[in-house]
Picture 1 (cartoon, rainbow, N blue to C red):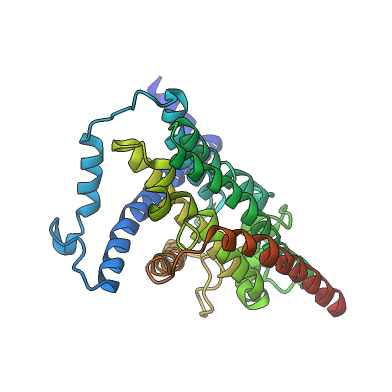
Picture 2: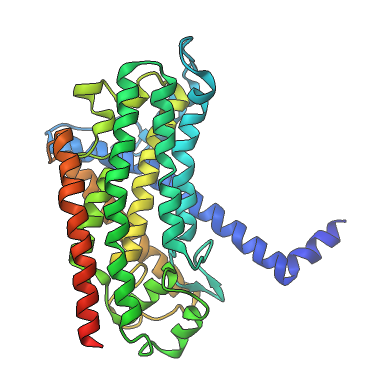
Length: 368
């Protein structure tokens, strides 16, 4: 029996399953590490801005504070209020967390290591998959507000659903010019090594988009308006300041997570930071060239394991930079009023995104 298992893992199918399992475990571990230390960085950045010390008791410079917070969350009493709708109350935190984990599956976090692509699921419709999965996260927040049977959490849930609908339209339209550009310009200039990666993929494939940028330049240079719209919509989609209407403490006392404690409360915050990380990874892939750098020798497919690992490091560095920017904005910008938030989404960003699509299409048509 043991020999049969060993032989199966030695077969092509078994090796493919094994490599996929290793990639899933690696991506999940790195994601959870970034989530944990994003909280630490946020507390340090806010402390520096407000002239405080920040966490500095647990470990050197407070580096073990995330571990202490995790232990505290696990050991706290898991209290369920008697008045809540218990089934929805238990489901909501998990529903908030799961979409972020599913989204990172289609992010190309590197080029190649050996013959293995550094992406878990290389889908032809990666962008459609991303927006479909991301939109599911709001159900957890709405369920949390509904399950609480309290007006403040309920208002927070309603705000979150309206906010997501408003900005998801602009976010979806902002990426259309990227695929118009990548599909309209000459892809044949890419070397033969790139063609193997591009074979059999459609225009909505994220891996194809990254390889196009490696050969032609980052898409933020071709579509800066798309980048601005996507960045603003990312803040709204992840409920971050200045768009944190669903949980603003001054108005809603915390919003949808008021009735939660212990690990359920921690899951909401893990879901928020995991969503931030997934959005930063998607932005890196779409606009910042993914794992590529405009440096000779590093802008080609990995020929050795070390170059493949360097590509992964480049990708993670870009993701961390975007996360730092998101954290910095929270402590430097005031919160919008709710009517300003909705007006910006419907009357500014959506018309601007439509105009951006038309202008891009006309420019590409004129060049052809």
